[in-house]
Image 1 (cartoon, one colour):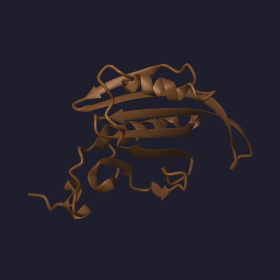
Image 2 (image 1 turned 135 degrees about the vertical axis):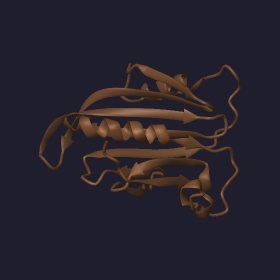
Image 3 (image 1 turned 180 degrees about the horizontal axis):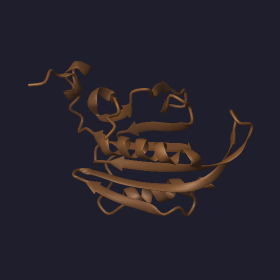
Amino acid sequence: MKVVAEKILILDRGNVELALPRDWTVKPDPAGFLRLEDGTEECLLEASYMAPPPIPPGEFDVSERLRRVLETSPDGRGAPVTRVDRGDLRLAWADYPYESDDPKRGRRRPARGRWLIAENGRFQALLTFYYWVDDAAWAVPAWERIVATLRLGFGEQLRSPLEHWSMREPG
């Protein structure tokens, strides 16, 4: 089994966290989200989060929110939505095909997009992931690991990143 070195991305002093492969870069985008790119710049993950106002029970669960977002995208419209509950975290995600211009190769190529909304009643995160179809063998496992490590907090912020579990000395 190959062990991949990771780095932990901590947002808002611990209210959102996820693990990324160590060679990925993290850059803020002026539009208000983070751009996370692999070392080869062949796939892109965009991440944002917010603390929405309380949503009344029974109104627009995480799956319905994602369906409504997907309706705004011609490529994502009608994509099947998968919902997963993981403890206090509720996730809904969809995967869809599209074609895009590849500036490195100078032609259009088949690609995939994945959108995910995660929420825990206090915070909501939106992840969008784009990759070339022929990179699926490594891009999809990277996405799955990132999603598996995604955590949302409950507003108890760390005073310093050094308080995070990943920075503490073992034992």
